[in-house]
Image 1 (cartoon, rainbow, N blue to C red):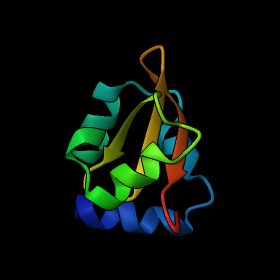
Image 2: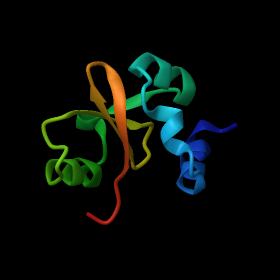
Image 3: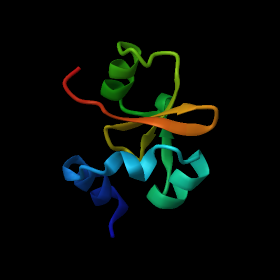
Image 4: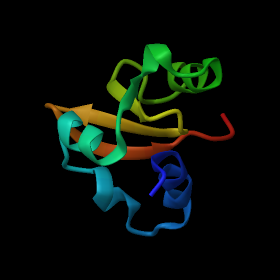
Length: 85
């Protein structure tokens, strides 16, 4: 499967959190190819992060998608779709 297309398909997946939550960065990179640090995300995504309740938290984006992963203690604890901020 095209990994860039996979992130788009996650929008309709009711169990998408189970793909991410509880996994380490390494496990997520093995599944999705790479995680994009917030510093390398688009200006829109960075701005949304800076104006969100997750500001200051350890986050990364799945590839170049609007899916942000919040990490605590090295494991993903939340999957957030960044839109309309």
